[in-house]
Length: 366
Ligand SMILES: *Cc1c(COP(=O)(O)O)cnc(C)c1O
Image (tube, rainbow, N blue to C red; front, top):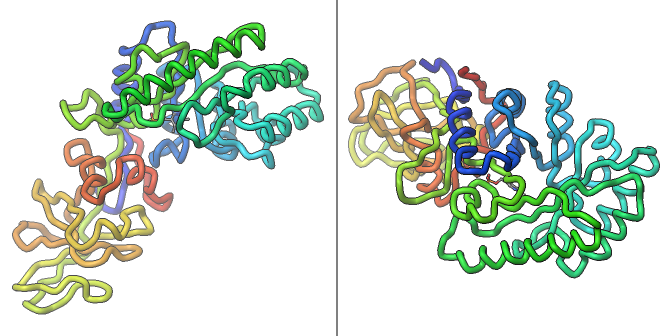
């Protein structure tokens, strides 16, 4: 029973999700676990340590400082940094973090830092743009990049990769197939110019689920490990890893025409019972969940959020719910999922999960 706002992280659900995703792949395919943004809002170190024992081959984070945290906690598995900034390249090398090189500027700067530090054959991952138009070299650049890489002993391409724009959206199937073809053709060209083709990887979680033909030598799974598969239909085979729970701080009986919260956004049309909870937009429950959009669960019953979400509190309507101060409240868990709550506010599980503020207590459940 939660006595304060708590984010429970289930390592058994994580294990189940890892094995479920793994079972869709050929045994020789490598598995990269994405643990950026504090492990999608969970707790990156505990999650990475558990995943390391399950046997993942690689980790990915977005930024170099996220990788440093993992290394300081004793993570030994290779770590790919998806979006490194040249300012931190020296730190990356000190902590054995492997950069994605995605532009000429970034590649030149990395080679220069690697040469200055006197490292040999430092592993880098070459990112190609196949349609997302976010990060990556274009296919016209293949020969120049291969030559640049061959021209320096300080670096070595250990993988080439790209990212799918709409792997979760089957209406965009033709676009995705085209990305897969483009990536294939880029890898052939890369092989010609570089002498061999390193590990190739393209699929995120939805790619693994929807495009098994594009598995290549490695896949990169994030959201699936945390229990969400982005599928609208069919009950998920995955289990949500995180559960957000809190407690009722106070209950106010209010009269008709009384208002609740800032700017009096809620006005009672009849007598009501209102409960106040100790979490708000500073904890990751944004203002978009206010005014009836979001709801929570108390003693198995659903109560909607009334009025504006405050920084440290939300108020909920418990008029028809038998409850008292100190009772546990579920914001999301494995049955009332983060995805369901996120969808009510027109967003996705990724945003709600990664918004979970660092001030929320984490409990790791083995
Ligand atoms: C975040 C990210 C992933 C993981 O995607 P999921 O949909 O969470 O599985 C994979 N690859 C790249 C490049 C990413 O940025």
